[in-house]
Length: 540
Image 1 (cartoon, rainbow, N blue to C red):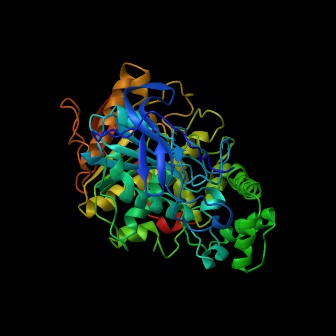
Image 2: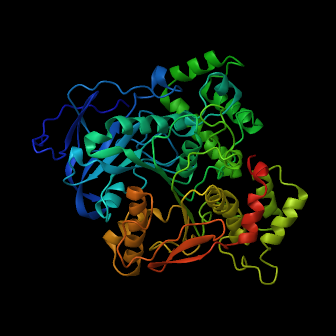
Image 3: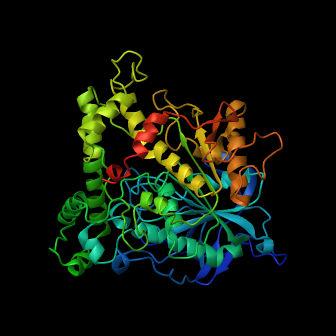
């Protein structure tokens, strides 16, 4: 599907006073958005915002540009309609998808002038590198309700096989981690153009959740270039939070072979012929093959295909080695986790300890017998007296595997970030989010992604009472960090202080029940220490 480029003549013009209107002219085209955007995420915003919902930041990665690094956006004749979101990148479970998806959205407080030079936040969504989009969080609501003014940018990047196709062939062709390069290209776009939206390219925060948090971490580790951002937020994500071997990992070769067989583009070891074929076949063939591989490995085995890898270029080494060697850009960090990170992500049919350990062994094949014995001790079976995993919903070992998977994939890795950053005397703040989402089923708990609607202030727009209080509080902390690098600097006087995480005073902020309070970092601490002690095992 070709990108919709339509010439439209609206009465809204760029006002001579310099107030940012719904039309902006960039080097490659003119874009028309909303100057009074008042409703988002099915709720009325507390204050209207300026909104451009869909601006291409790179050329469509289609045809001969498919499976290539991002390229400069094409020149647009007339005006481009940025009042609709446009398609998400190809992924499972979403109807409006297209490989022509390298777009971003920009939101600014109403009345923003081009010379205002407001701080900027760039949002990279989560979704295991296989799902998600720039509007996964309501950035409009986040900006609208914030106690401090800033400009927000949400970014689409290529997903699944289109953006993350690790293999020996892909490495030979120089095409690993294309989704990461999409993100870097969007950061460059912000550097070049955000001043036209009233933003300051010298005051940029990267904000990612889950897989987006992982990529934010790897941008922070990319020390080969001067950083184009000043601070980072990683919600339920960390650079150590994924198994990230290099492209030679045997499972990746198998997945690549299966992908090429499904597309009809298997050409042996000839990477030129292989990718030439992949650029010539219909988009639907590539998308269907990508979704088929995802369904087989994640839906059947609980293993994510199409992942970020150490490519020896943008990512020079595994994350734990960058932490250990002190090779990262020193800048303020805000990070944290949710109580039940994995409840919505793990199998719901594990009935025995054999099932429980088998899933973990399949996920992490280098776990030894002694590791498995330790895991059994750390996560006692539901029939063991006093086990916190008794009376599990859905299946006997559901809560047990949810705790173990959430710890190894997210919670322990967030702790890794805070430990190494604080050792390096980097300002870092850690949270523990523990507030149920309104209307959520009880078995889900405080699940992965559930903090986003609170941070964006959606619940404060929709509801009253404790939930609204929690949402306003979190929006204030995140917004303060975005504009200053300190979650305490720009918050109401009645808001509790959020202490820095220090190596000799490991304190996190618990966010629950409409308030916040500091507590020791001791959530399942023995289990976290175990997972953090075996980083090489977690890489595979």
